[in-house]
Image (cartoon, rainbow, N blue to C red; front, top):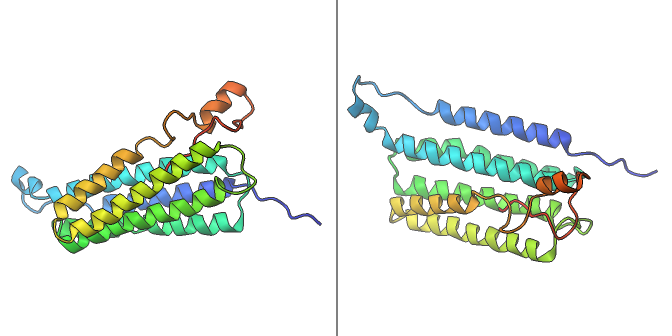
Length: 217
């Protein structure tokens, strides 16, 4: 008997639901000031900054995750567990966000915050290894895969550097985290069309090798 292939549709739906819950938890951590003045509102700037950065980061993670799973044809066991590890890492963002907000960007919380981003990026690389780098995959040319790996490891290094810098200069560590967000804004590799865009051209729903580009990690 042949093993029945499981499509990744339910994996996509479950992941989207988890992301929605994480964003909901994130906004619930915002607490209004007790005083009735704009000065009291301004004093909450650490919460506002951490919330904005975290919200943008979660949005970028979801966009990259959404694009990556377009390349998944089968929900393998390794893909499912890698996805759970990735979602676990993302689920730590509201906790770390609340910590740095309550401590007003103290050193250890910002370092931990950057460490969570390292975990998110590392688990995303696990997803890429299963979806993009599997032997059966021929959706991407070799140079696009190399570009994805380079950008992924550069971002990992920046997050790790941010965690180290934050221990002495928390604001500097937060600035490096924001720099990584700029790198993440474009999900596709430069000069490489996405699989979805290519499907609009050939009408097949699949992009030929050498055209589509993966979301970056």
